[in-house]
Length: 218
Length: 87
Image 1 (cartoon, chains in turn red, yellow):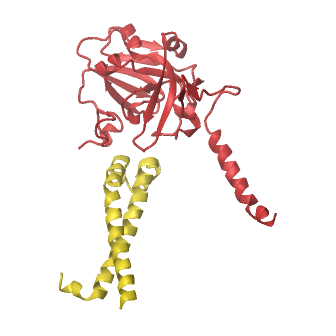
Image 2 (cartoon, helix red, strand yellow):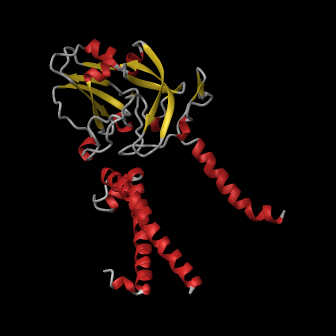
Image 3 (cartoon, helix red, strand yellow):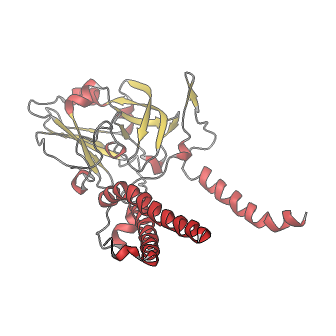
C-alpha cells in the first residue's frame, strides 16, 4: 500500500499524458475511427505525429477555395463541397515519413486526375505543383498522378481529416516519401517547370521523393 | 605512433579519448535526431546551421561512427581490466 502511494503521483502524470496524447487531434464528437479494413489492421490516427512547417492550420470552409491554375484550359476555384462532388475513391495506403515512422491509413478522397480533367490540362505541363495554406509546396510528375490514381483525401480511417493533419485536403502520394503528401492543400498548379522544387526539396530533400530512391539529394 | 603506444598507459589514454568521442557523437546523434523531428526548434537555435536535411544527412552518417568509437572505448577498457587481473 505504501509503495502504491509513492508511485501514485507518477501514475497520475502518466495517465494525464496518455489522455492528452490520445485526444490531441480534433475529431468530431461521436465519430468512430475505423481500425481494420478488409482484414488489414490500420494505424491509429492519434499515432501520427504532427509534421508541418508552421504549426497546424485552421481552415475555414466559408472562405476556402481549391484553386486549379497554371497550364489548364479552365482555371477552377472549387469549394469544399464541390470537390467532394467528384467520384470518391477509397484505398489503404501507408505513409512513410523520412523521420522514421509510418502509418497505414484508409484514405477516402477524389482522384486528382478527375479534377485535372475538369480543368483540362494543356500540352507541355508535365509537373503538378501542390500549394498549401501555410505556404508549403511540393510537386509530382503529371504522369505519376494520372497513372497511379493519386488521391486528394478528405477522410482518414473514416473520419474527416483533423485540422492538425491536413483538413480539408491532403495529397495521398503513395510510394513517395511523406514530404510529398502535402496537407492543407488549397492550390493545384500545372507547370512546365521540370526543375521545380518544393519547400523541402529546396532544402536538400530529393525532388523525386521515391521511397525506393534516396531521401536526400546527392 | 606504434612506439608511442608501447606505453600501456597511453593506450588507456586513447581509450578515454574514444570515450569522450563516443559521448560527443551520441550528443550529435541526439541533436540531429531532434533536428529531424523538431526542426522548427533546432533550426533557429543553431542559426540555420542544423536544418532538417543537414540533420538527416549527419544522423545517417554518424551511427556507425558511434558504434566504432564505442567499440574501441569498451575494447580498451576491457583489455585494461583483463590485463590488470592478469598482472
